[in-house]
Image (cartoon, rainbow, N blue to C red):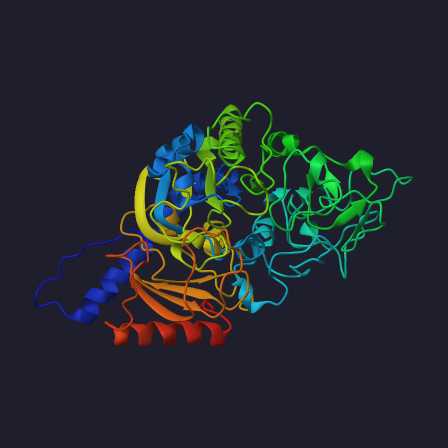
Length: 534
């Protein structure tokens, strides 16, 4: 407990030693009075005041310009705009990687994904990427007394070796700090189209076991290749395996017919499950990790959104994620929890148009700018790959407005640990830093000065240091559909103050800056961590 500040005038001829003795005595007296008079009040306060609920909403493939508050969107997102108006919207808000699995790994563990093998885009039969015993934002908050749940897209693997789809799917979220989960196990362009609740696939009929594999199970098994004319959404590249709901996917599976879901119902199901879980845990602090599938492919919004955006299925799914945000915020209002809930809205990477399906994303783009003013998008270490919508809202605690401070999803574990009074172990969350004051938009608070950005694990990196940006390109991006993305190999330097779109390489004009950032990047990679242990 801090002692009240005391201002004393000291006679010029009085000795310093005597004055210090008098000050110490007075401090002890005032402290005793304070403890006596506030003992009951403090006890009452500690018993009634609880930590804030924390809700993290992570969209999928949503670009900086995909929300209407950015000024670049041809689609209106009134619910996300409302969240931004009631909270702090960050113009330099980032995820840590340009694809889904590595960003989700880093958000939960606070460690750059490139440091851990197997953190690239997870295959349908991938084992658990985050191993039991790993400290995560969920385990930190659970230690602080929170109820914890993960609802939505997982895509971080399940099981040991490979998932046991007909048995217990463990390890998984429950082994890294979550009390409950209701998941899409991979991502919806990959098989299988079933949910996972806690450790099992719900509604699975033992007489119709689920099989998931990488090879076509039989010559007559319907696929996007053999039955292409029957598809309700055609594929453009790769997504031509098993057909479910008129859409072919990556990989193959059979069985589990009673457990399968309809693509159109994903968002509704997750919102309903999330609201029910929050209602159940409204009387205790809770952490909800809500991982939407929108606007990832295949873009199959519910019928009530189809055809409403004018931009095709991609735009319709932007409307759907906006509805999800509004439904969750309305539930917090109804439960009278909004003023004691910190909400974080972000995306797992930047935008992509044709990402394997012919869904008019390119043809109906019009004047819409998914990445806003930034170059690149998903798969890219340019700004468009990792600079995304980023909002924090805590009614009555976060002053509404806009912040240019640099914040990143990788810092959520350390920041939430600070919020709840937890201490991170020395060997955990190796790259997560406490930027809670910046996230709460406190006056004068500073965000990151330096941030590493990675691709899917191909050795391409971006390093933002202040307003300088180093792009290290070792391998060309293979996806031909990435917007404005044909970088040359080598190290490139950009001045984001003058060139936010990273169009002009100024490495030759600023060799000393280039060398400084090259050394910084090399050190970050070599050191194995950036967080300074407390």
